[in-house]
Image (tube, rainbow, N blue to C red; front, top):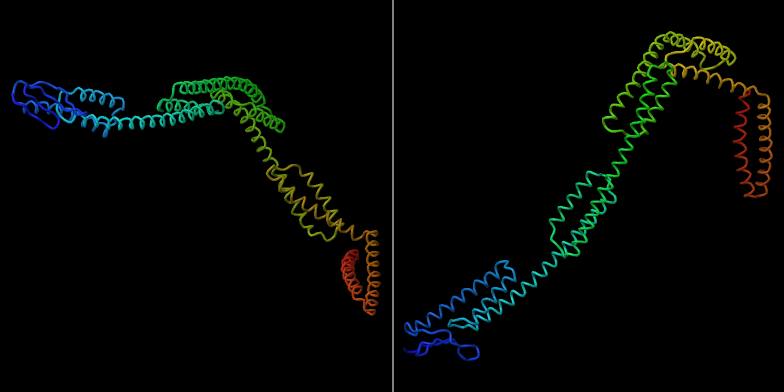
Length: 412
């Protein structure tokens, strides 16, 4: 059998196949007895090419897919073992170098994955800490029980959807979340237990108020009973609410009793008002006569006439409520006008007031005469400042005198 050679191996005369190693030596990879040496080299080259294909496929998976670093490293280790012990002819050292480069790439990928996982854990921790903080706030502050309970359920779902973090932190945060949910549930139960007690107290109080309201519904003491109903309504509002069905039933009875009383009162007032219409007509005629006194010119006559009008007014009796304020307002206007005329007459004829007015006028005239003399002397002497002071004082006294003379004129 002849021999054959290749840049990466050879076949000797006895059919032994060698591959060249990186240190310049050779390693036996097989034996070939069935044909020409060239066929032997071709066979063992195909085995090399199969290794190349496997490495290329692994390189492609590492570069283009999200193959896990651990799985990639297992594949590299398997292929490295295959290359080291390969029964193949080719540049096995080049394949080993490619595997080394691929290993470095996978190492970088592992670091990237580790960093991504660390970042994801950090974000997940922030998310779960936020969830726990909100749950604890709800447990301590929320009083909208339905909204609070629904939000806590949503927070649990958000917790489940978030990535996991390190076990100790995960466990501690979950315990806080569970404690917050339990605290909220306990506080809600306590609230509704207290609310039930309050509703029972309100029911007892309102049943008592209904009994009082129904007992008064037939009263004809209109004023006092109406005030009593107002007090009952105040107590009803301050009693709080009973349960919904009980509240509606008690309110229907309470309002029914009020309606019965106030309807009877309205009917009685309407009947009374009808009877009093005649009194209102009489007072309308009296007012027409009384309004002729205005404006007051003869105080004595007006006073005597008003006294007679007031006596007839009282004798006419009460009027309907819807007319009372209007009629009494018209009479009050006349009474005020006569009273004002009387006061003006008294001021005009009061001798003491007249004497005071005359004295004031006399004093001001005397003061003005003295100031006029002082002004003349100041001007003659050229004392401009004294003249100016005297002029200002004169202007003030003359204004006062004009007012005082008007007051005195009122007494004439």
